[in-house]
Image (cartoon, rainbow, N blue to C red):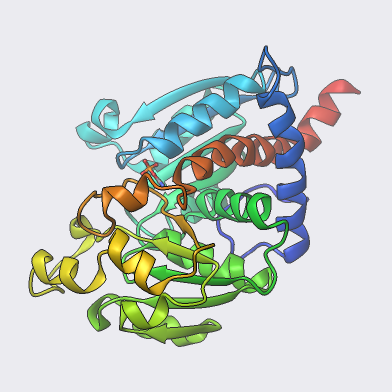
Length: 311
Ligand code: CP
């Protein structure tokens, strides 16, 4: 991989995805050591700019940076001068002026990372931009899938829930398509976007029809915060038709099925606790892969600079 920024799965070739996953596997070896630290990114400075809440992405980037000995700073919107009227670009330029090499950004506006990437010398990593893309989540999921099944090609993956507002779904569908998996999406018609037919996916509206013979059920949260109008009659109705309950799982899905979810999960809404905590669930494995994948991306984007510094 020889690029300045990581903005979306859409931009990545299959070979680049393979390289990120390969390097992530070697990063996992660092995470399994008693002392989980390597000097790989010594001298590299990373700023994590988060203008939307995050538990998994912010903390896994922060840990990935620490594990590779980078210097890092975190700026969250509630404590930034954006609240005093500073523009996003001015904020980012000021951060860059502090000799920052990589800016990791989460923002509610689609394209915000691309906007910065065009205007900054620092590398930019998209940590989620509105309902557009969440590439590091998709790469973590691809790593988790590969670890479980030793392959991605030809697996049958059903993504269930609020596809319309999900950057995770968009990045994952693109990634799974590139890696040769068979992708299905399922949800209420109001939460399946009209642009879905640009991807190689099969659309179903009935959960019980999509459950049989899938290798993976990837469940999504209903993103009420991104809905400008009510797209569902009620949450009670959503739960009735689309919640993955243990009873539905056992009745309709394969006994070998795997459950995934990017988090945060809303227990009792899109997924029953008994399913989220079951032996079928890889939800916490996705989080573990997240640290290794983010270490891999930070290293691959800095590789040129590391090589220049060592010469
Ligand atoms: N999956 C994900 O992006 O989680 P966070 O919002 O907690 O980062």
